[in-house]
Amino acid sequence: MSRKGNALAACLLTAFCLSAVSCGPVFLHPLSDEKTSDRDDRLLGQWKWAEGQDVMLVTVAKGKGKSLDIKAVGSSSENPKEKEEYAFPIFTTKIGSQCFLTMQSMDADAKKPLNTYTIVRYDLPDQQTLEVRPMEDDRIAAAIQSKELQGTLVTKKTTSFLGGLISMIDETESITVSDSPENIARFLRKHGRDCFAHDPLFVFKKQR
Image: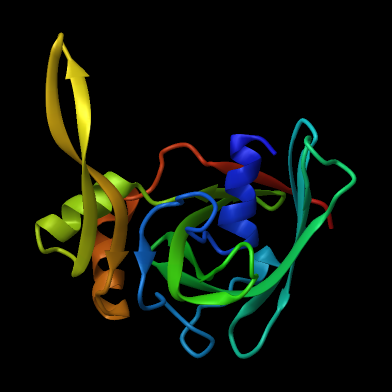
């Protein structure tokens, strides 16, 4: 599977788990859950993403409480006949005019849930198009450093070559946000437009 195909498997099939591809910050608390979610019924139905032979079909149905259930089936250019299938709940949250998905992380190999969550922003520019944008690592790392959000950064020293000079810089390996859902919501209300990729990572088209 291509890098984007791998990212899709990691980000959508396994709720943006860290075990396959780093898909941005992880959260210890969900932005919303089955009791507090603003369920977005516009997501109901089947959606398709494709790039070459990398294909993903995602079916969204009503779940428990205010949750939505996702069933995702994917195949890749490396093994087009081999299908990967995952199912998990998602929770949607609307803050102002912005829409967010909260998904529980899962171990890609064991297919077991982890005690962390990932938040992405989604947009529906029309009834047939779903755009998914991941969080920007640098923006959330800066928010933790400035105490706008509570969390921890794990860094490592790496070598930088710039202008013929060699220097050691800190490179962020992982970002964990431990703040409360209420504080995360307040932060996203104020800074949400700046915290996610400008261009969507994935664009899905509705099938039915």
